[in-house]
Image (cartoon, rainbow, N blue to C red; front, side, top):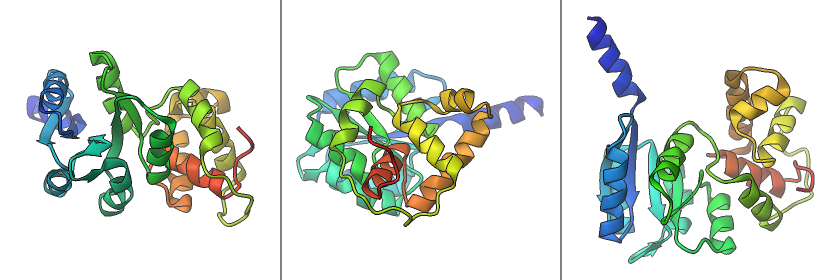
Length: 224
């Protein structure tokens, strides 16, 4: 009985991943790398946006690795609609050159972050696990570079964020993980996750990065 419970718990902890990329060899290699990990499982591979969106509906993955250039459309532009229909899916954009315009657009559309197509095995698996855990998959250096390029606004008070939620947002803007924010505020990681979940709901955001984008647009953050 204990073994059955242990197996069940392991199944629940497995991160399910879907890959949408028209480069068959790359997609297959990513799947091979991910499936080699005991807590990761690839549930499908698609070479087009249309097929990929259909597979998202069929498989309901935890994490979607999405190429931004697909033969039948722009993956980044599809993120908003995808997240609206499947809010639990965390989207990590696969980047080749990583131009700032594409990255900024991905953040504003609700991506959880980015992973380079040239990344090593450890970077890919870490990115998937981080996205599944609700973390922003982006380095503090890249975040600092991109924040000033996000659309900014001056309208304040539209969202009723608490003082602590604003404080958490500012720390997210510094590129801190949930654990690091918990250390800074001397609270539990669970408390930080609750704050992020609450402020994301208030902002209508599907990821930490999208929450930052909306907060900037609504004038809720200080200058980065």
